[in-house]
Figure 1 (cartoon, rainbow, N blue to C red):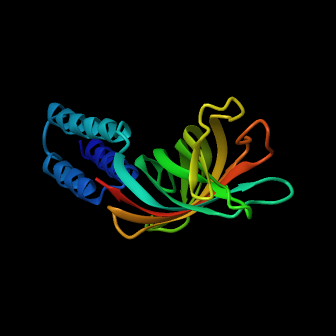
Figure 2 (spheres, helix red, strand yellow):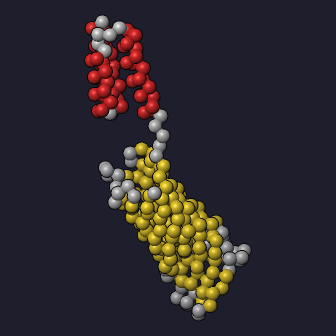
Figure 3 (cartoon, one colour):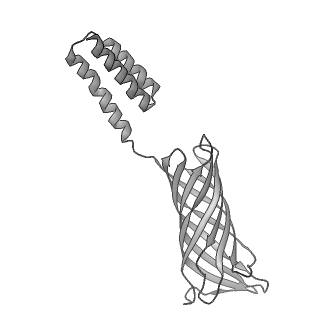
Length: 228
């Protein structure tokens, strides 16, 4: 009986170490000591709740967090030879943050973004998009406060105008425009606490704005986010 109880004690302590739960380990040791003089049926009763707790930990559901974000844009149009002047704007949207492990989160977003650019002749392009980036947030420190963020983005143009000498012209129905925009995003984020964070991001498109032009979108963003 002493040998059997000793084996049970070692088993319980090992399971507790794997679970990395100090409180759980103490509870197991106390339960084992209290049952060292009991019958085999009592020993089986001790084992049952331990196995049940281990199974529960293995199937822990990942945490999902929802939030809102917004900030300022500095947008321009680029090609292989030159770029336009910037257009100032804003971005606003929602995001969901999902923890994969201690060093990685995935954050899909739905964001309204003001893009475009202006040239030296006085023409300003105003292209507005609904963008859906999927960001991989790689945390470089512990606790998880600073992350490097990279990921793809797909966007859809919802408005297209240009202004010249005080007049605004709607060109959204032009068949020369590419309404779908694909981009690559990279940047960084810093969390002050579990609710607030700041982020810096650059979005660079890999698709042309219009069939008649080689220009692509480029957007720098500085913003803040709040998790509910």
